[in-house]
Length: 62
Image (cartoon, rainbow, N blue to C red; front, side, top):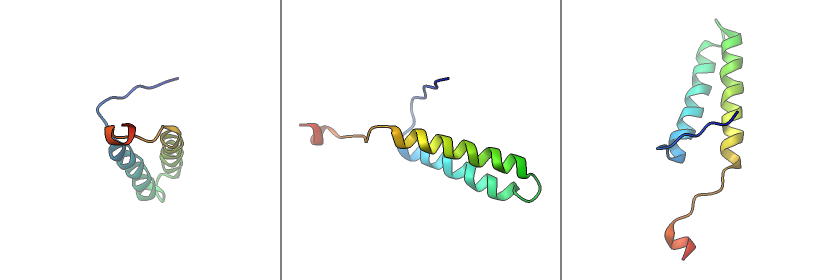
């Protein structure tokens, strides 16, 4: 499955990943399966994020 999201900058994606990891830590004691799911999702998003090309500015391409 593919997902196309517009309107987010790289920092936004990084913040979503960080929120998933913080949420996983928060619920680890009382909901370990949810914590595992959040960590797995964060890692999958992070891996996909790492595969994206590095953004360039117009100055770098000129």
